[in-house]
Length: 308
Ligand code: NCD
Image (cartoon, rainbow, N blue to C red; front, side):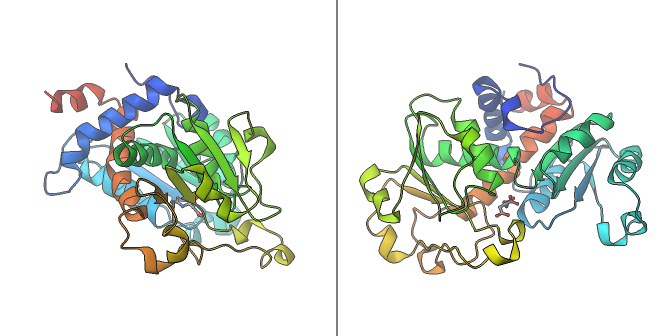
């Protein structure tokens, strides 16, 4: 397979074969993802990170991924830019495009990154568009599930928390629908349910957090309540918590994932339980994003030659 798309905006652009292919590249690159063994695949190429919403993990792992591939990175600082002089985002991005080979964009508005990508000639990766999507998080989540559960099919996956505004959930459920036999459950505080367009015959809402124990869950995917996307009066109405008491009742094979940042929904007292794996997700994000950057910059053959 050859990567033949300009941008990655929605996980819906990828089918099972595409996702498997990216995960295979990530596996090949994994031994090189530890920095001691830096590659030169992207030497001379520049990634621009344009984050118009806060980010720790996504930006950090894209930077590390590009540097580990031997490329260079620029980080846009919105606070010190002409956006402060009322320049349009589109003019800003068309300017930055002159300085780099690929751009990763995060923006508070759902659907906006697709519009920016249409106006740019270089490849664009969506690093989160408001409550819309976060396709690279879904890819690293798939890598994590495959590694930790041994498969991406026939899984019972429980999504918890803010399923309305949580874009990581919106992309992950779409990604996992490429694989057969998966069943999805949603536990969310009232008002934060999964959007209707993501419902399906494979999806069931659960009313009570304790119903999870009857589902034989393989993956519990917890998310924070996205207060910044709510009206001020809505903000303090919702909360839930996964703690020691809760995980004691889960099967041994279950895995608790969380895209982070966590606020108070995932108690730190359970961090050392081997079933709680958010920091592994973060680690696997590096090789997954290395794979994506290498493919999108046309280095597919070089990646596969590393496997020989
Ligand atoms: C998430 C995001 O930005 O969508 N974080 C991430 O990228 N790992 C989750 C969140 O903000 O809650």
